[in-house]
Length: 241
Image (cartoon, rainbow, N blue to C red; front, side):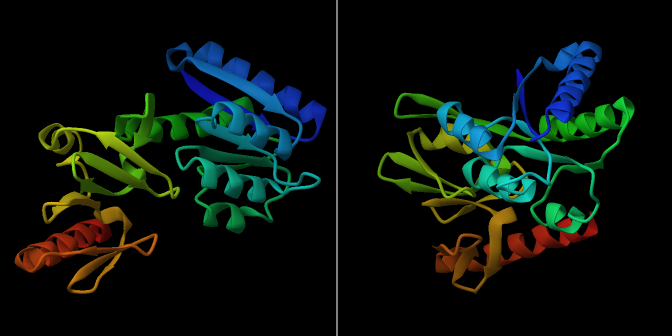
């Protein structure tokens, strides 16, 4: 089930977006879309805190109290897995919107076809992501592989450090864990204690990997030449693509 949340301060616009979503759902029943609508940023954030963030958030930008771009930043601090689509009358915020990696930016008025095309692009990208299921303290967490910074082995537990700043500690056999993530894009071993996501490596100092959150991952001496080559090959391939 794909959960979509809408935030717009104008009742007429909320109704229009809801109608757009009903039309999209009628034409694309394979996605199993459910949606909810909020008149303010505060109400949306409170709902996300209670029951979890949506998969996709459709946000107006020019709203009283909090701009949609500010709301998007709060959502992404809470859930890196939420894709943001802005629906707005003004093109003036496009640079700011894309600086926070908005999935799309649609200027009002728009057609149903434009609305559908934007959703299709975002959903298609979501379906291409690799998801990992983790059982932590009795709860099942579904996280995107792209959001994992690194995984550290501590005794018999594996600690997943995520881009959002969260840490999830799980029991997992090393072989089972490695099978689920190794070989996926950017995931590589760093010694015997760490699996790192090269997508989130800021730089390689020669002795440590510096992660996006500032964490230093020590690279054992025996692995440094191999890690240097893996780091170089990964980013060379990224540049070519």
